[in-house]
Image (cartoon, rainbow, N blue to C red; front, side, top):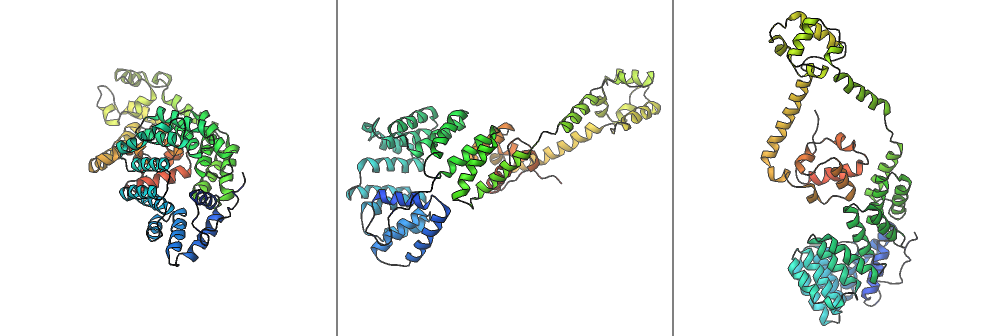
Length: 438
């Protein structure tokens, strides 16, 4: 993958560039960390300048680097033209001023903007505002571009996806790609949709198509890396992350993910530990009849329906002594048996009591904010990787998630520090946290 060649566009001295030129410049600025830094430095030098031309160029520059409120303020002062109104609408949309964005899109038509493009942008704006009826109404006015415009099918698919019509959305993403095979946004959304629905082979194929292009599509590469790591293809996962870090060396998610993948390469199955765990379970299930106890003790335990070693861990000394004909001699005999195995009477009861106490504490928290903890994890807008790991742990609500410790989450296969930090940040913003052991 090679970096995008710098376009011969001088935003700050040339006459007003076209929409196509602005898009090329934006692609270049976002293609690498160094190009973004260089452009930002150039932008800072021009921000103090006054005049309509300077207001336009710095407004566009501020939009490109993601400073949307400042961009809107600058563009308001620029000379009226279609590019001004369109990018002003883009900036307003980004800061949630959807009504004002629509008004500016309408103004752009009076200055020569293409009607179809503006209709589709208005549909996207209404969709982001969750006004799905208005979005659908806009798209219906462009329905004559079905099987003609890739962007029409893409915007229709985005609306269907927002409404939960996932299969219909996938069909329209595919229709967009048939008309424009290199439509990167359609490729990404289709890959993402396939990923969420469990069709990992298709998702990998679509993400690979994006990765084969000449632009570093960070989200696609990181999602592809997740899929590769889930399959145990760690070298391929590393290659994806390295592609990101080559052009964005300080990308925090990629850096953390790189550490996770490298850690996965050194993970191993502790066979001895698992064997010990299995052996312990086998010991606990050993019948009482296999131990050398007196006839009196064995008969008493049988009458009490205590048939295995684990049954002894679920009864206390007081309960045993309260049984008819069960005396101190039998008690000492059984305690000696358990001591030799590092166990004691009532051991399981104590563990259950601690668990119940923890559960009671959690119940109090749930009573205080039951509505929050009953929210589904799907509402958190987590990355695909984190969401998959939580699904593997059968965690569906925030309440279930807060019952887990960091160690329990990290114990899940392929659940690393990146996912843990993401989850902690998201739920921390909601005022809740993972369980902490004293």
